[in-house]
Length: 395
Image (spheres, one colour):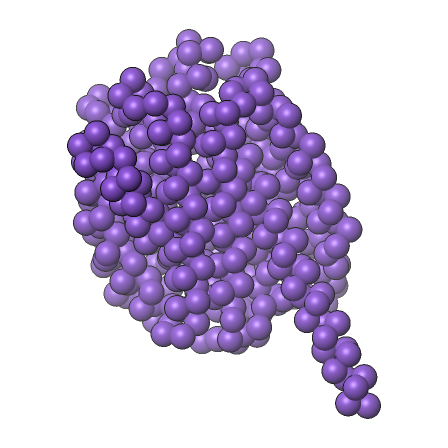
């Protein structure tokens, strides 16, 4: 009898590990596609004869469709079988984002980006909920950070891929998204929606309150600073640094984000979620300001990249911690809370970036980026208002 129980437990562990691994790989593929847009901004501006501010509209569109709409798909993920949603996400993201170079007009380009955004919006809530439901309580921060690392690793590869293949060459990446969708559907179990309490609009409104709303505000301000840096630095360095210097800088920033997320998630399992959030945002403010005002030419390429690595790690140490904290604040609505923290916050930041892009057009990219760093001060103040969430079982 003991042997049988041990075998069952082992089978359950393998199954849970498989789900987390598949969702992490899907996150990597999905976010690799959505990160293709920013480094291709100058190429898009040249091909379609548009301005920097116009490319900011595309970033805002991707964020609006791909992120702000995530709460809707999060509620859907709490009501239907998440298996279908998690598999469809990378497929739609692949089709929409890899065809950007073949859009016949700027309007058609916007439609393709919107399609890619829908894929991202479908995937993220269900993927995060799958991970939460299959994580051990004592290691929830770690598993969430591994899932987050998959996405940030995809973000790291995206700029290099876009630079190497170019606007028209990225279409060769499409089969990766189609294959990932098939693998995801084949290896993940049904989420058995019939056993779940169905969330309605009133439930969602009630969820977006108290500490979750405070967490959302922190995430919006933090995301705005990183979105601004990743999107404006190619314009600031254009003609001053080589394209590969720009691409490697963005890749290092994103790779550090993955590592920082894992470290932050693991530390939060030991010392608490709020302590990690407060310390990360506080340390980030001076480091980010320094990164923006220096250049590879002024301090040397290696020191610049080391600084970029440090900022990326500290900035994104808060992402998985904030997601897990929100899930623990509302344990019965993991897909919905995940969507609020990952999609709604990032999407709001992306939409607000349109204002940052306009400000950069009127001033300089450096001044606009520094303005977003100043907004991290109220974000740090908000971390002081957060209570430590209780660690309970998630669904």
